[in-house]
Every structure is written in C-alpha cells, then in structure tokens.
Amino acid sequence: MEVSKFQTEAKNAVLARLLACLVNEKFVKAYLVLHAESLPARLAAPVPPKHRKHWMCISAASEEFELLKHGSFLVPLRELPPVQKPPQLGGEPAEILPVTLLDPDEIGFPVQQLQVDRPVEYVPADVRTVTTQLQEWDPALSAALLEQITQEMENSVSHQAAAYSHHQGRAPPELEHTTDSMQWEQLIVEGHATHPMHKSRFHVPPTLPIDPWNNDLSAPKIHFFAVPRSKLTVRGDFEKLVAPLVQISSARANVFMDSCDELVMPVHHVQVPSVLLHFPHARHLPFTCKARAQASVRTVVVDELPAFNLKLPIGVKISSATRTITPWTTHIGPAFKPVADKIIEDKDLLEVAHELASVVSNHPDPDVAKNLSCVIRQDPQHLATTRARSERVVLSAALTERYPSRSDDFVVNTLFHLDSLEKKELFFQNYARLFLRAFLPPLLKHGVSFEAHLQNVLARFRPAAVAGEWELVGFTVRDLGGIKAHQQTLFETTGLELDVWDAENCSQLAETIDEVHNLAFHTIIQCHLHRLARALSVHYNAKGWEFVRAEVDAMLPPGCHARSLWLGATVNWKAFITMKLQGLYRDYLYIKVPNLITYRPS
Image (tube, rainbow, N blue to C red; front, side):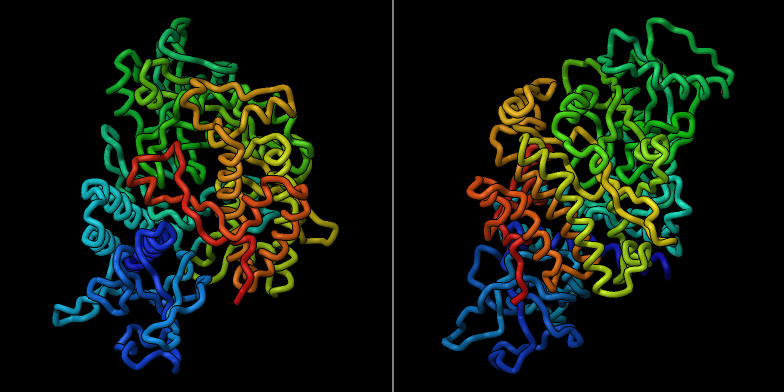
C-alpha cells in the first residue's frame, strides 16, 4: 500500500511539471475557470472534482478554445496562477481567463481527461496520456522524441517514488549539529521544482539500467583505472591531489601501485561499462572505495580526501542532459581563479569552490572523451572550517525542500523557526539582499554569470548574537562548467579572458551580453529566489517580489540596457520540453513569459 501511495504521488509530481512546461512553452492553451455564479449556464458542465473552487482546462494550442472539448485536460488548482483579463464569450463576460504562466505547485489532483465519445467521461491522466494527446494535437511533433521524453519522465516517476520511500520519516537536522554539509546534500527528495525529468536516472548504454529501489546512487562505489598518460589531458596537480585516495584504497587491497607511464583515475561504478567499452587501453584495478553522492549525483565525497569533492562522469540522463563531463568543463575550472579574484568584490560574501585540477581523455571526439574524466573541487564545508569561522554550510536546495515530504511546509521554516509571516518576510529580505549583492555585480560590471541555481549555491551561516540563532553571512558557489561570460566585457573591465577549450563551440562563452543575462535571470530569479519566495509564503502576496524589485532597481544604473531585461513586463523563460524535442542541453532556448519580479497580485 505504501509503495502504491508513493507511486501515485510521484506520478503527480512529474505530471504537474510536465503540464506547467506545456502551458508556459505554448504547446497548449490553458484557461482558468472559476466556479462563480457569473459563469454562463451553458458552460457549467459536471466538472470534477467538486471540492476545488478553481480549475483549469488545457486544450490544443492550434484550435479555437472550447470548454470541455474531447481530449481536453481538466486540472484542479491548489493556487491561482497569474491570469489576464477575461475574454467575452457570446457577448457576456465569463469567468474564464487565459493562463500564461503556470507553476507545478499550483496544480492539484486528480488531473482528468475528457473523453466525450466513451461511456466514462472523465479518465485519470498521467504523463503518457498527455504526450499521446499532444501528438494527436500536433502531428508535426516527432513521435520518436516524444516517446523518448515519455520514457524519461516515467523513469523520473519511478525514482521519485523510491526517493519518497527512502526519505520517509527523515527529519532535517539542527544547524548546531551539522558539521558535515553532506547531511543537507542528501536531504534532497524532489530537487528541481519545474523540470519534468527532475528525478530521472535514465541510463545511456552501455551504462546498465538503474533500479531505483536497489541501486543506491547516494552511496556509490568508486573504481580505479590506470590510464596511459599519453592518452590524457591533465590540468593542475591532479595526481598529487588524488594520491592519498589511491594510496589508501590500494593499500587496503594489498595492491602496490608504481607506474611512471600511467595515471590512476577514479571512476563511478555506473560508468565502468563505458570506460571498458571506449578505452581499451585503461586497466581496471582490483580495488575500490566507498563514497557519498552530493545532490548532483555525479559529484561525490570520499573520506580519504576531506578537503575535496570529486566530480565524475556518469552515463545517466538527469533532467536535461547525460551527466558526463566534457573537455570544455574539465578545462575551464583550473584556470578560473584569477578571473574570480577580479570579478568578486566581497570575497566573504561570495566565495568560489574552486576546481583545482582535472583530467580528461584526449580522444579526438569529445563525445567519447567525456566518458573518462574527473574534476577535483574544493569542499565548501572544509573551506569554512579551515578559516575557523564556526560556519555551517547548507545547500540552498535543501531549504526549499518540503518537510515532511509532500507536505505544505518547508525545511527553511522548520530550521529557522519561522512560525509567522513577519519572520518569513524578514528572512527572505535578508537572504535576497545578500544573494543579489553577491551574484549581480560580476554580471553587471564584468559580464560574467555563475549558474546560481539552488543546487550550485550553498548558504553560509554563523552563530548570531542571540543564543540559539543563526545569521546568514554569505554564499559559496560551485560548478564552474555552468558559468557564462561575455569575453569582450570581461576583458574591458579586468584585462582578462576566460581560458576555454575550443572557443568556437564553447557554451561558456556568450556571443552577446543578453545571453549572459538570460542565464543569470533563469538561475538567480526563476530557479532560486522564486522557489524560496514560495517556501516562505511571500510569492502570492508579492511581498517577496516587491523587495526583489526594489533591490534590482537600485543595483541597475539608470538607462542601462539591463533594466529592460530584468524589469520588463516579460522575460525569457527556459523552455525545457522544447529543448528536449530539439536535442539541446548545452545551448538554451527561451520563450517569453510574464516577469516574476514585476508580479503584483490582482
């Protein structure tokens, strides 16, 4: 019974994300229908479920909207999304309003499909029901790609159900008891709030299928391969940094390692088949070690290297992409520190978990090379500890997780005892103020944006003057493979350029400054502050956006081009499903949606 319950809730979680994407990306039309006396009688059909005050009808984008049409989806709403003025139907105003921006949190259940040509009028909907209907509405869509996307979403359902089960009863710790930031990394139950493949662990052959109930990716086993140095590109002092791990692991197995011609590389256990297939010159060594996975799954912590994290490729699709590590990513990190020193003004407010060294296969095809690589990154909690600042480092994504899982409350409220709207508003204001002052100056002054979504940012807290309370003092950002920079702007302000591999095809370089702003807005506002505003109940009352609007307005110089990008009525919104249908993950596609920063409740 419990497994069935988790499966149902997981289906709902993925379905909500899919429907929100389809509405926002204009694949479908969506109309809010209010149960009100002014609703024309001819439209007041038996609409399920009766206990919902508001519901939404989703229909084909290519057709004139018609309420309760065959194939339409009827969606109960938990909250009202932003809407436009109501249209005129038959000369009389109707309580039917177009929906142009929808969030998964606003969707209730059950979602049902209208089947007017069958004995049963309303049938339950799931992701396959929706994608099948989408294909009927738009035959031009690739059936093969839709099937692939559907399978990835169904995989996401399975892994989400397992995550609900595994985390059942798990409570967030108190800050004073968390000297290990991994407690927050492994608190993530749902993760990405809007991507339909948010929990996907879809294997890419030769990687073997991953059983969500029996293959624990939170505690992977690390294998080791000896690879000829002539087959590798090494940046930084990789061998010296990884040596303690290799020495301790080999000694436990009574294996003696001494080869001048080979370099020993750690390999995630799910990646072993790929290494064996693509790199016949790599020797599989007879020892392993245990690891713990961070929220990204592919980055791990090993006890033998307490100061570092290991970012390892895995042939697994998670959300938008297969999580291997390309030569572009292994190249950029070890050379980034001089740039960071120039563009970050307050290094106590914003610190970087630097990528000190890396290694990648020098195979001429980067799609092959990316299967054998590794990045050594500074550990954020170790950085805080070594400076003796008594800091606690908390993954920002953990703050916006629900606790208990699937409830209407969030970890941030429990952790900081935010039991009133006033306390929540104050917390949001302080967090947003410091966050914007940390991440906007590198963008506005130097044309560089970190990928500051919830999974890449860790909030740093110190004990406050009041006993038992904690003060937010700054942030640590990680994952330099996700940055984007406008080289001309960076060079004009610092005299430096990003050191990149294959600049012509490098996704970290932007052709225009607008591209950098698009990434910044997506990660800073849509993926970070938006989720925190919802968790702290300052989204629908617009208190959070009123504060963010004032902060951004104060930071943008009068008359600058960026004002229209950040404070305009509409903004670019990352189109996840459109990108999947076009096979994109390193290049982004956007659609226009209402700007959250300018949101005011109607």
